[in-house]
Amino acid sequence: MSIEVISILFIINIIGFIIMGYDKNQSRRKGQRIAERTLFLIAATGGASGILLGMNAFRHKTKHKSFTIGIPLLLILNLLSVTYITKYIQN
Image 1 (cartoon, rainbow, N blue to C red):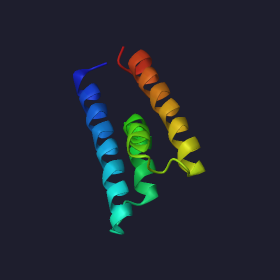
Image 2: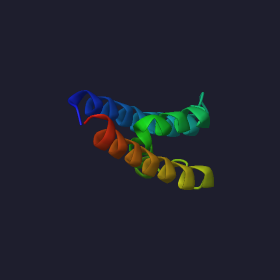
Image 3: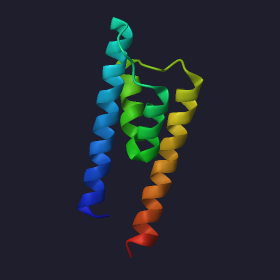
């Protein structure tokens, strides 16, 4: 896998983690929240592990079935996609 792909995935996951912390903080302060759709979009584009780590670190969205089921499924999809890209497209 190229350094560019690794860098992009790393950045997306860092963003996902930070956004979960930000949304938790906004939730406590009754501020403007990040749309769940946006959180799922970040997870679907390769940031599922960052979102999942953020969920657990900040104890945010951990009681929502859509997140406790959806984000791990997107993580599996992310891993399958990276495996496919690494194995079939880059060779």
